[in-house]
Length: 222
Image 1 (tube, rainbow, N blue to C red):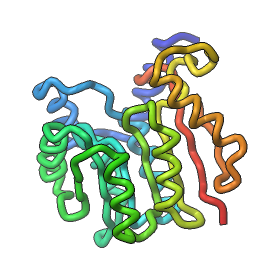
Image 2 (cartoon, one colour; image 1 turned 45 degrees about the vertical axis):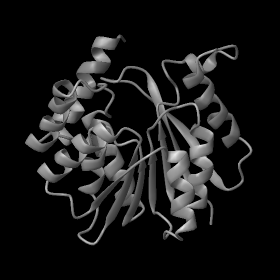
Image 3 (cartoon, helix red, strand yellow; image 1 turned 135 degrees about the vertical axis):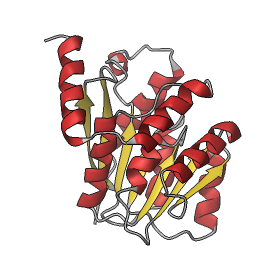
């Protein structure tokens, strides 16, 4: 099999089970219009996040890394009307674009986008005694992924589902001598899960329009 087949199968799945509406396609267009990185999750992965959220009956969601709000919209749509999603974004311009896209999707009442470094904002959430989250999606800068995960645990409850994107990186994680800080960041996280008694975790390897990558999926132990 080759990458062309992976792309075609991914498109088949997305067209069948994760079709994009105008709010989602407009969000993808905004990346180009605003000269932002084209690194949003795929439609299929957006739907996958929804399925995971529904499996744990998520009403409260924390997202690290908003970008233009594409994954934010997918997740917010899986929330009940009284649900809440807090998304952390370091870039004020990206956050403003995301707010417009979320508003365009009619989801502003469910979504709270906060601007700043996640390593600064996460301790504030803890200090403010924020209620535990049911679902946490980590898709931000990679070097501090382990630290993000550790904070996620502090903001969790037994049964919380924590998902971390981009943890295979086209198999670059297999290189123990990598000098790429993004690779080193996800390696630290992945390796830390081996002895982490607080979660039951695995890594799901993925292929498709986002090429070869993977996600950590971890359930906080009861």
